[in-house]
Length: 177
Image 1: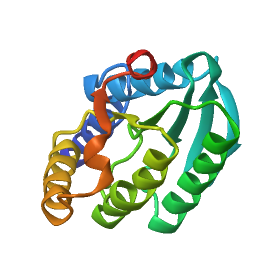
Image 2: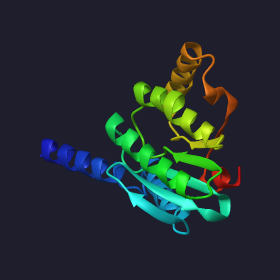
Image 3: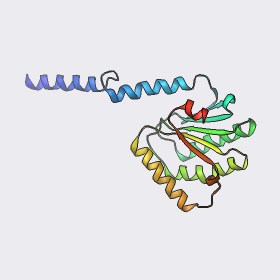
Image 4: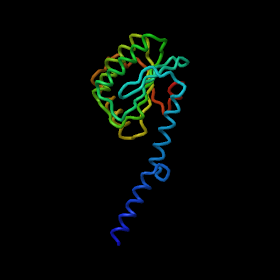
C-alpha cells in the first residue's frame, strides 16, 4: 500500500513537473518558443534546411539564419551559411542575424570557420554588421565567450575584427540594430 502510494505521488510529481503551466522553467521555455515563432511570422522564409531556416527582411535589409534544432553539424552549418551567402549576393542585404536560441550545444570548429572564413567573404561583399541572438543559457554563453577569445588569439589580423558583432535578446532588437 505504501509503495503504491509513493509510486502514485512520484507519478503526479513527474506529471506536474513536466507540465509547462505548473513548472516555471518549462513554462518559460514553452512560452519563449511560441514567442520566437511569432517573431518570424512577418518575414520571408527563403529556405528551410535540416537544422535551420533562412529568412529575409527587405525592410531591414537583413538575412536571418534561425537555428531550428538543438545542434547543427558543421556540414549542415556550412551548407546553411553558403545558402545564406547566395541570398546575400542576390539581394540588397546589409546585415546578418543569427538566431541561436534553439541551440543547446556549442561547437568551436563551426564558430572558428564562421569567423575566419564566412565573415571574411561577407566583409568583402560589404556586409559588416552581424547580430547574434544567443540562448538564455549561462553555459552556452560562457562557451561562446571563451571560444571567441580563443579565435581572437589565434587570428589577431582576421577581417572579422573590422566588423560589428552585436548581441541582442530578441529578433526585433536584432533587426533594429
